[in-house]
Image (cartoon, rainbow, N blue to C red; front, side, top):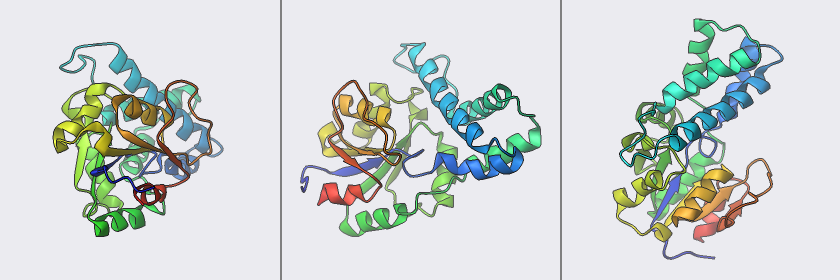
Length: 232
């Protein structure tokens, strides 16, 4: 069904536009037999650290414990290596971090973004990623000319899913939350965005069960082409 009130489509970055598990190929090369385990634990710890920081300080000006997503990503990698008992070297760490800065996009993404541009639909990213790592990922994926804005929680020093983090979008565009179609492959992010008041699309790439708390997202799809179906 066409949603005439949607004025901008805002995408989460990691897991939605960029495949966080594409790092697994290099991880497997560096640590044979452990690539999948390393990439999964690395991602889980990364998200855990963002929540720990956001929950440990209610200062509206941003957490005193805040670290950039890049620094958290590096710390999470070090933890994952230690947890799995894998040898840590500076060379391996630097190689994995360099690869993380240039994660592979999902195959349908460029086509969807090009279609939105042809329709004249405004687009943006809202991500936990730091501005520098987002710029690197967007450029390497060939998306630089297809996104109207790249917004980072770095500006408010609070990670998603705090209301302040989502408010970056409404402050930037001046739209009501319901006028924003927020797209994420992370169910927790879709839930937080729904609570905030966005119109939401959960891209359930892994065929996972829905969250057992909170309202369901307004729309669910298997890949990013669902955005075009929602807009009609």
